[in-house]
Amino acid sequence: MAIQIIIKKNAYHDSVTLMSISGKVAALSGVADAVVAMATAMNKELLRNIGMLTPAVEACGSSDLVIAVKAESEEICAAAVKMAEEAFAQKAAVKKNAGETVPSTLQSAVKELPGANLAIISVPGEYAAREAMQALKQGLHVMMFSDNVTIEDEKKLKEYAHAAGLLMMGPDCGTAIINNVGLCFANAVNQGTIGIVGASGTGTQEVSVLIDRFGGGVSQVLGTGGRDLTEAIGGITMLDGLAALNADEATKVIVLVSKPPAKSVAEKILAEAGKCIKPVVVCFINASQPDRPAEQVYFAASLEDAAYKAVKLAQGQTDFGSACDHAALKAMAASRKAKLAPGQKYVRGLFCGGTLCDEAMYIVKEKVGTVYSNIAKQPEAKLGDPHTSKEHTFIDLGDDAFTVGKPHPMIEPSRRLPRLLQEAKDPAVAVILMDIMIGYGSHSDPAGITLPAIIEAKRIAEQSGRHLEIIAYVCGTDKDPQNRLEQEQKLAAAGVTLAKSNARAAYLAAAIVS
Image 1: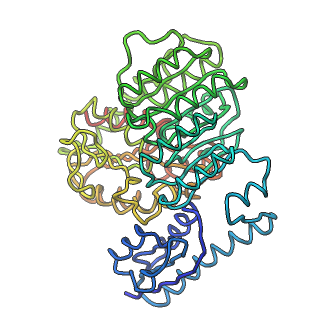
Image 2: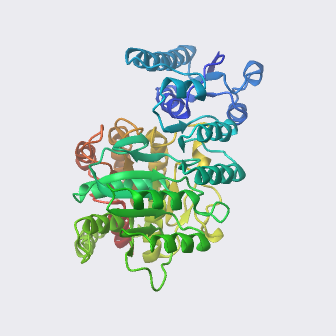
Image 3: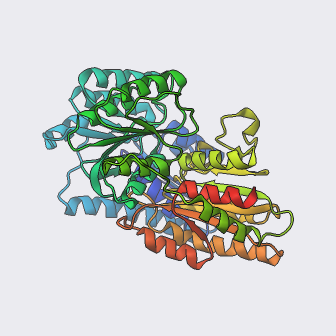
């Protein structure tokens, strides 16, 4: 193997840009490892683990850029490094042609845009809290994409923001739509009267795209970061977001989205929701609901149910019915089940979106019992080795075990493909369940990059006399750059069964094996 390492001093780039370019370089044929990252302590440790930490890199500071490639030949290394450098140059040229300036500090950025009222923070976690506090002190709302921020710093930032009448979204906040502008990972959805406060990125995306599909639209989408509803934080940002949407004239219905919150925090949020002058739909995945919720608080059984009820409420209806035709799903499941060989009995879920993985896992668990996962909350269901499945297994490929120093699978879904082929070789597997995440920030063609592995997975099963049922859900809209319909057509042509929501995909998978 050949190795080439380039260091660019004082050449800071945000993590979204770095993950995107790193993913493109890593996807090149003949490249074994590629790291395009700032020289933080964590990234140096990653380079050490893969045998690419040199004394020169060790001496770098966290504002220095490292492009490190390990490939089959020196020529491939050189081509990969060139691709990365061209990508950075192209990004700089786009900014220059658009007349954009690149302020070197927050203070200079505020002078450059005196009317701005929101700062997006995407710097290494060790510096993120300091930059966020400076932004708050400048009177700016903050969306912090950065993670690896201490819980103590998060609480301090959120308490300061609350006292100042500002929103502190994050850390680790990946999704927001403000005044119809998507920030970080978001989808192109209709503007409307439904406001969302989400403590989960892909869960929030799912609700927003399904609102769009049901004929509704969103007013504002506010993120909180994944730790907001813990005891330590107390739901500060969700409560502030709820209050902001309750006061917003353009918002008629409010949706709250989260993985299971701490019980005391849930009680506090539900109490405030009960005081709102607008209907509030609550989707706390796998969390119990109170016996007597407030009159205008409506609980949702799934992310799809939350979107459906929100649209109905926005239309002035409270006789909801159900968005999902469970009888049709059972009939479809029966036809798929008839194709299975003896011994095929397990579902394997391979997800780019953590909340979608969580939701699907809980739905399937209700039908089949234990589901193993790298993100399971119960110790007995936690996988000892996240790289090896057993029985029913659901994997969040965006978890730290798979993403340290590597692009998130929403940016580079090719990282899921080896695992797809691995699961296809297991004769006990009946169903493989996948999400296809599109929208701003996501890969330009996730279905297209996945197709060769899907075709190969089905071929592997057929050669051993098995039918492998692959179920996919495309989370996005026809207005997204990748176009949901085009993505679905590619998958359908390869024999993939398509579902209209993440929940329906999970219900179908469970029905096939239960």
